[in-house]
Length: 175
Image (cartoon, rainbow, N blue to C red; front, side, top):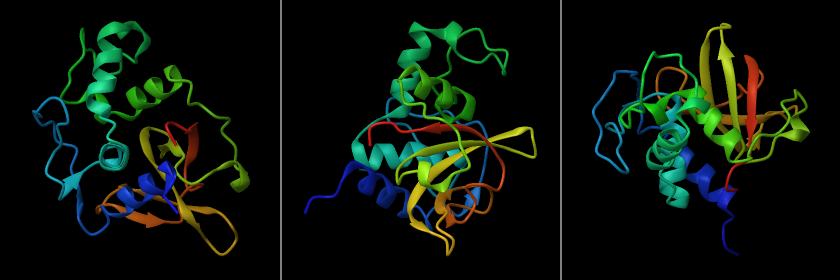
């Protein structure tokens, strides 16, 4: 039986556990398209970017850049930029959330575990001020809450954290 896109996405995210060992938000000049920082480091968005690239051959760097070039006014102005920056735009949670909304991938944000499917993307606000994202796993905790695969510090991990912070987005894109 062939793996579904969601299963491939989760496997690609899970494959980063033990590889991406630290959280490093430093601005880095990247190759384009398909640019990436060293896989030993990264941020929460890098987990998602790498999973989509590795599992489904979808380059969020190129896709977000193209949409931002065509629709710059639709994206957040949090960084005071006057034009897209292909080195960093796809690595920012608010930009990814905007991209997925524009792609029609938004789902209702709920605290009901039954609403979250393997391969879904979540966004949160950590401490009320730091945007965060990750991928919903196909594994659950003992009470039925899905685990997530993310990098919130200390590298990529799979853990029980879906409802640890205020949820701001729920997306189901290409799975």
